Image 1 (cartoon, rainbow, N blue to C red):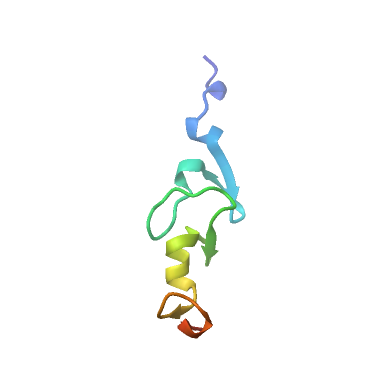
Image 2 (image 1 turned 30 degrees about the horizontal axis):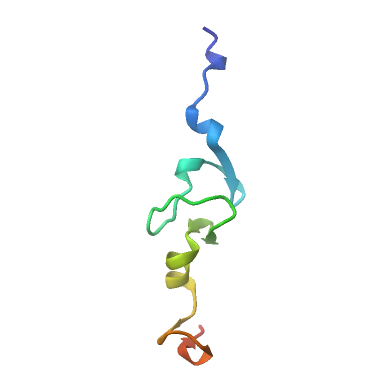
Length: 75
């Protein structure tokens, strides 16, 4: 059997995100380890994060309350 014909099963599931190629199951949130879809996540310093709740909690506006402009503080 020609070894060049043998392919990694993960390579068939390659996605491109953040300027590089990932095995689909390897594109995960840095904080909660949730598997992400290309283009449907946030990034901070080149690392992927799920939009909610991880990216919002780590890097979004800080504050109190349930919403409204008065409940947020910006750095």
